[in-house]
Image 1: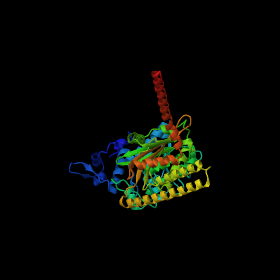
Image 2: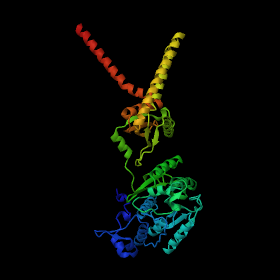
Image 3: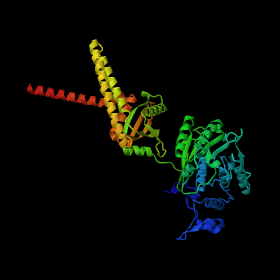
Image 4: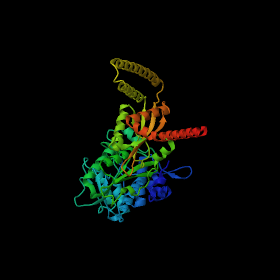
Length: 515
């Protein structure tokens, strides 16, 4: 599905460029263009040279920029870059910097093309600082700046690989934003894997320095966040692009762990490719509240819609019943799944305002029913011992004998069940239970917050029965059965009282009639 309709409303590439016009004006474009049977002009997007020429022509035609992209260097996707730049403009205006010409931006990893500083300089005329680790890219970037006579407002600095921002921030200067398109891939990733992850509709461009970094983009942006904690308000808003959705999820959690709450994110949609923008600030929320900042596009509240449609099995209880915090509960649940050998898998869902933890649980076998049976057996034996602790030794011996017998029969049944399950596993490879698992924090005004657990059955040989037994196990493991009993007892007591009063009234009427 084309995502062009979700591009920034002011993005000029929301409308496809007129290839006929480009072919008439630029001979270099004519050299790469093809005419199909219907007379329409097309280019081969899977050809690296075609992409390079198209980008150079568009920069010249739409921005009056003279750029020559060297071979083996990353060819910037202009619709994506413009989406990002326009979002930065929206953020600057949101924090009352209406005159874009007065802002100062830092482009982290500017590259050989120096695309972001060149576009900012042409679109707004503001000052830009570019940073780069590769010497050849720096020389090419400086050449592009001088060719376009923008050296008075664009400066490029070399930084060490170990730092991102520290080396370029001057003590008395104030900077308004950072813009960053980090390397997506880890150094250890195979080239085949990298090619597979790149957009399949376009040719892959760029070299190892531009595409890969130790730890991938997650490690790079994590370091950027750590450095921002030291720099604080010297940069008004820190922004970066994320190429992978799961990295965005990780980074949002990481910012929360570092007590950075003034955060927002957006989606960059263009063609058939989606990227994400992340922004955070150390400015007071009274001055700038990024939560309400403008975004290009965010996914709908998918989880709430899913929970409405699927009718999940639920567990609700006060969090103070056992846990000091929501994170404490999540850690407990993760440890419980580990003990049960239940696999936790990330759910590939749109990001929304769901206030909780979500994942998919995959159980190959029933590892919770035996534990539940043993616990009930132990409780039964304990009750028997308490009831008969005043009796003679012979009674105690009988209890012990019956206990051993019960344990023997139970273990025999367990062994039989295990052998049956082992045979079933050889025939059936499908897991016993696959369910989507959501844990939501429900906040109340009086700080007596509740936790609600939703479980939606996806599939599995155990079906609804396996999900229900798993729910019962969690109720026992969380030690909230007493809470459930109390919540369910009240209406029953009322019914019993009503029945008793009705019976008394009937008996009184019978006595009156007989008299």
